[in-house]
Image (cartoon, rainbow, N blue to C red; front, side, top):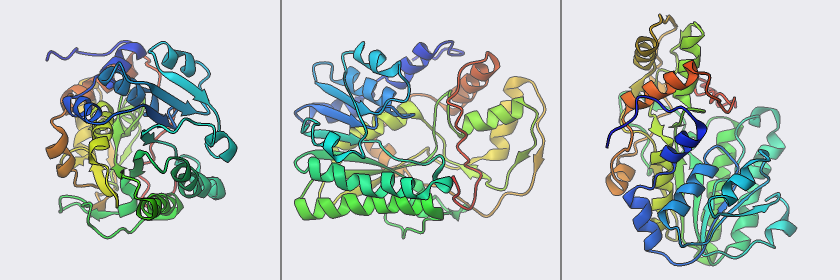
Length: 340
């Protein structure tokens, strides 16, 4: 497949982010019934929902969110997706939702977590109990985070699904609480689930690569203390999350979704600087540990990447150079204390 030199519009970007991979198409073909995406208004929600509809165009697909972006509901409807607007923390509202057999749970709170701990815990730990009670008879794919592992040695392959969990900070601990609530309701009611531990999804408006490229282009000195990441194209992450629908079980099994291998921050910045034709400076020294996941299982099950790293880096740099919009939400990946 020929990849373009750059992407020039949000429409073109979202087309690439929502192109369904074979694993996503196969997973949806293997199950029956409507699909509902909870938290569809977030960073990943729109393109994941688009991908579901493109992978199964005959299927009823419902997007649920408060939708802080007022234009998004109509954009979703234009693609044949039903939209329900409401607050998932409102149990009365959740009780009105159709009991779809296939549920993708994307709701959660990360940014601002260190400044609003009660809401963080309500969103990440209490909300799953509301959802699990309403969707007892559904398959649920629930998004979590690799932050539940804590830092791991950069000399190893990364945290494996069976490793002990050592979350750092209230955000990561609240996400572990989210997982435990899903596990509890699955064990009590037999609800088949899959828990997706996602690390470092990237597109052109958001992600570690956007953070780094923005700093390099601005001439900022790059701190390399958090020296390594696994970066994954968000389109690949969308496809893996959808494909996990065919791997739901009770009790649920966690699935790491992340890029393969460790990418060194210093090397990424040098590549970005070369693409942009600028210089880059660094400070600090790479720590011996980082937030890294071993996602070889997901790649073995769900297939190869649609976009290589060199292309993604070029797209990010060109996007920022031409003034492309961003979500304005730095990942804060460099924070080693779990404060978000």
